[in-house]
Image 1 (cartoon, helix red, strand yellow):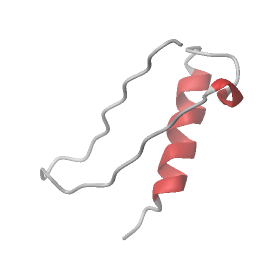
Image 2 (image 1 turned 180 degrees about the vertical axis):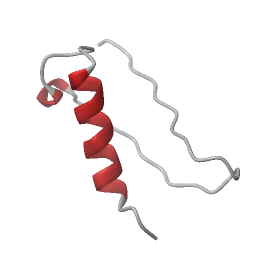
Image 3 (image 1 turned 135 degrees about the vertical axis):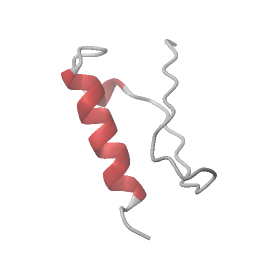
Length: 51
């Protein structure tokens, strides 16, 4: 169901880049994404770990 998970990930990576967490999302080496409908509230959980 919309939105496509790859588009959600791309938007998230762009937002984190724009926020200055990193200079380029090409630095991301691993990404796990899951769509779920566990609650009635929209949202996202993000965990960023330095390697």
